[in-house]
Structures are given as C-alpha cells and as structure tokens.
Length: 267
Image (cartoon, rainbow, N blue to C red; front, side, top):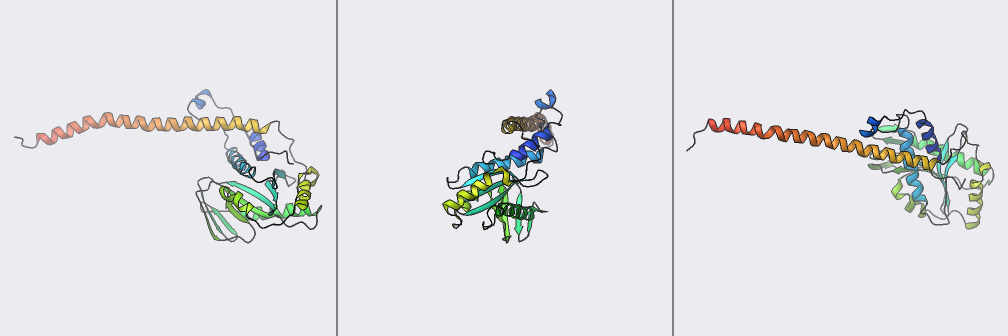
C-alpha cells in the first residue's frame, strides 16, 4: 500500500469518465473550451485536493507514515489518506472547497450554506479502518477522523465536533505534530506493517490504470491551458468593448459640448 500515490483512485475514476467524453474541436481548443466533461469536474477537483494534501503529508518527519487511496469498501470506496505517527492513527478525508465558506457546528457542516454529510462520512471511515486493523491488532487505539479542507474561503467553527477534526490543509501538518504521544517506535512499526499489507484491505473493484499520474498531469496541463485561453478571450472581450466605447465617447462628447456652447453667450 505504501507504493500508492495520493489521489490514485480518484484519478483513475476521472480517467474513466474522460474516456467517454467527446474530444474538443480545434475551434474549441482555440477559444479555451475545457477538456473536462461535466461528470469529470468533481473528480478533477477531488484529485487536485488529494494531491495537495499528499504533498503536505510528504513533509512529515520520518517517524510518520502516510498511505494514500486505501481501499475500504466493496464498491470501490477508499480512504483518501491513512496517517500513522507518534501522535496516533488518523483517517483523512480531503475536501477541495476552494473559495467557498465552510461552517461547522457540532454535527452540522455546511458548504456555502448547504449542509453536507462530511462529518458522518469521516466518522464512518475512521470506524471502518479501526475495525479492520483491530482484527490484526485488537488493542489498537481508535483512528481519529479528520477532514482536511483545501483552500476554503473561510472556516467558521461555532461548536467543535465531538469526534472529527475539521482543519484547513494549511494547518494540518502543525496540528498532527502537536498531538500527544500515543505510539512508541515498536508499535508504530507494527501498525505501519499491517496498513502496508494489501491483505488487510478489500480487493480493489477496478484493475489498476497504467501510469495514471502521468495521464492526470497531461490532462491537468490541458485544463490549465484552456482556462488561460478562456480568461484571455474574456479579457479581450472587455478590452474590445472598452475600445469601442472610447471610439464612441469622444465624438459624442464633442457633439454635447458644441450643443452646450452653442446655447451660451461667449465673449
């Protein structure tokens, strides 16, 4: 399991979605039409979020270990990240809510005013991981569920959830390192070995995709290029409108000024 890169499952699903998406026309490319299908956008954003959190987890000290895209269910569900370190065992559910307001109060989590089941899902994932690992290590401390928010516009916590830690990705590393000691070195090694063993987890539903990260990077480059082209065209449209206005306004001002002066006695 340790060989799996962050967002692997999400990227593989994104690529499956994209395989049925019609290719852009040359005109579409020229005007910056996104290569993503409508059903692919959420998978793309999810992949970007998980990769961002994966990069943060890669900076943890060597006594910490992060596992990514850990299969957890029979229908292809997975845990974004399972992290083990001196401060405990954590299941991380990454959410890319860039530019959106997040509001939390007890058992309620809302994104831009809409209630979502993130807290319940995070608890379920932690409980599932705890049960599976305790089959091999019965006295293992329970997993701590965490929701890592990627670049939200704001995070307001009116009442702290009882079990789930809700935190921005930017503050995740510092929070993990601040946790009190739970595992010694020997126990850490044992837990990490159990997590790393594929036999601990359900068999993935889909066969692995060959070099999914390389395919995602190529797609990501296309998406970013399309966005840049689209933005340029929008700016060009604004510029063209402004230029047209500048061409119209001076003659209009001249007419108005002449009309005004024509009605005023001058020396």
